Length: 65
Image (tube, rainbow, N blue to C red; front, side, top):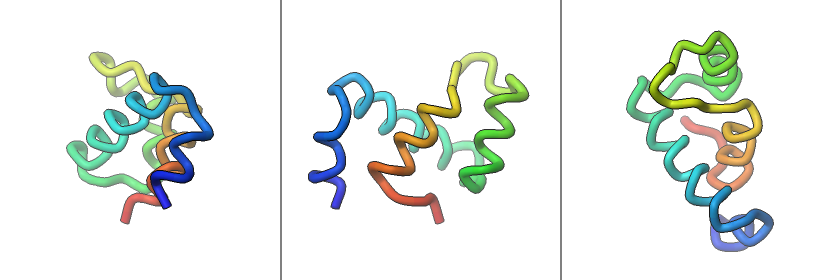
């Protein structure tokens, strides 16, 4: 459950995870691995996203389907 998992992280990490998840939806809902690849290739220049950000979002919200 999201409420239980969000308390594992700081408020800033949770807010960032929510933004990251929205970004993931906006760019076409790539899989977590594809999203990590996109981020590591620096293809989201206006949105600095790290692998850790993506993994936290997945931990809190579950995988994007």
